[in-house]
Each structure stands twice: as structure tokens, then as C-alpha cells.
Amino acid sequence: MKKISFILFILVSLFLFAWSGHEAFTYYLVQNLPNKDSLVKITEYSYKEDRVYNEEYLVLEDVAGQRKFFEPLCDGKFPPDPSPVDNSLPVWQILTIYSPEPDNGMDEGLNLSPLQSLIGGGSQGVRHMKYKIGPLVAFEGDKSFLYFVDMSKKAFQSGDRYWGYRFLARALHYIEDLSQPYHNAPGLFGEVIWSALNKKMRTILAYAHYFMDDYLVYLLYYSDNAAKEAILGAKPIFFDTYDEYVQNVMKYTLNKFPIVHNEVKRVFGEEGLLQRVTIDKMKTKDEEGEFYLLKAETLSILSYTSSVIKGFLEQFLKEVGEIN
Image 1 (cartoon, rainbow, N blue to C red):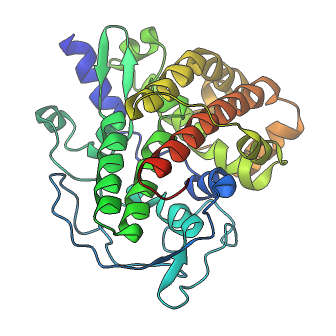
Image 2: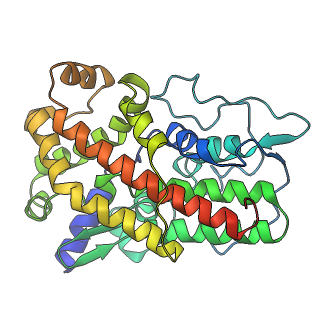
Image 3: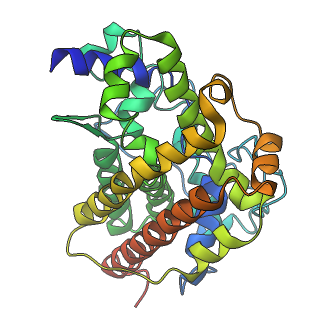
């Protein structure tokens, strides 16, 4: 067990990015919200939290209209990010522009576990993933989601709609991260064991993870409309508790992991996963028909997890009195 724990903490040090495209993913997710155009007054942060952050990168002021949080692989034009009007923003914009926020450094460089001394860091991975491999369950992506659901509820209960939605945007980030297959497992069990002894295998697993992070950006910005339609067309699914929402996202995605992982390796081979796969390389493989199964499985994940997240949003916003 200690051996596997050490391997996992080595691997997480390689994975510095997360499921990319949060802003577009979220923008499409919230289009069916009945109050998406409701205007919300911007308020100052006034909360005492029991969660530590890297304050060098923690942004608490409003940055709407500045495209501060949009990710570098995207086109810089979509989703829209207009400046506030009368110190107010629509619901859709708060959720959209702040959903990528946890990837901008607020979770990096922290001391969250004594095991982090093995790699000298890794708090980003600790907070954004939930690995299950063999008998070992590690990290706390699900707890991150639930933490910000609770913070959002507290803000709404105090009458602070702006921070209610801004905390909710952070919650969406973590449940979206857990829809990324490599946020649920770093590799197949045998590969993870071998990676402790083999640098090449560690590199392959790292760049397979990076590829899937960027593949959602490719689907949302550079491919056809299939990903957009999968998200927009998803119908809400409801569960009894907030924990059930995130657990079902993780369960579904983890079940898809072996298929997705084997396809990534088949398409690129070992040598192709020794470096970052570019958007241009993805386009070439797509045009050659190499992504047929991978795309189908990824769209299946997007469709199901979008249904779960839409169900969560509808249930949560009803409970806090934002929608009827």
C-alpha cells in the first residue's frame, strides 16, 4: 500500500493542468437555466474560510470584461465576457468566467498532506482529482466540490447572490474536473506499478493525461459541433444528495477509463506520448479517422456528466431560492 501511495504522488506531480475548456463547458451547461440572464450586483468578498489558498494567485475582486480566466488554448473570443453594467453581471457570466478559476494557482504550492514532501508539492492534484486504483483511494476532488457547494449555499443564505454564484462556479470546476478520465485514474494498475521504476512509462502516462485535458478544448473549439450538442442536449438527472451527484460523475467516468486510455495509446503509440500533443496533431488524427471511438466515448462522458451537473444546478438553485 505504501508503495502504491508513493507512485501516485510521483504521478500527480506531473499533472499540473486540468480538464481544459471549463469556460466553454460551463457556458453551454448553463444555457438552459431559467435565470441565466438575471442580473447580480457585484459585492466584495467578506468570508472566513477554513480552506487555505495560495494567496499569491487568489483573486477576490471582480475581473469581468478582462478575460483574465480564459484558458490559453482557446480562441480568446468565445465565450463572451462583457464588462459589468451598473456594477452588475448576469448569472451565466459569473458561472462561466469563474469556472476556470481554481486552475490559476490558488490550489498550488500548499501543504495539504505530509506525503507531499515526497515530491515537494502536488496540492493542485490533491484538490482536483480523486484517484481509485486497486485498493487505494487518494485525493479530494469530490471534497473540493462539496466545500464550494456549502460556501455557495452560505452566501445565498446571507443574501449575497454574487458570491453565491462565484463559489458555485468554483464548485462546477471540480465536478467538471472529475468528468476527465485521468482525474479518476492515472493509468492501468500494472502501468502505475511499472511507472515507479520506468521513467518512460511515467512520461507516457503524464502526456496521456495532458492530451485528454486538451482534447476537450479541441472538441469545443476546433472540431465540429458534436461536443456542444452533447452538452446542450443533455437532460437533467437528479439524485438525493449533492455527494451523489459527484460520486455518479466519478463512477461513470472511471468505468470509461480503460476504453479511453487504451484508445489514447492506440492512436498515438508510446513514442507519440513522449511529448505534448498539439492541437494541429489532434486535427490531423481526427481527419484521418483515428478519433472515431475516442470521440464517441468522450461524447458519452460529456453527455452523461452534463446531465448530472444540470440536475445538480437545478436542484441547488431551487433550494437556495434562485429558481422556482
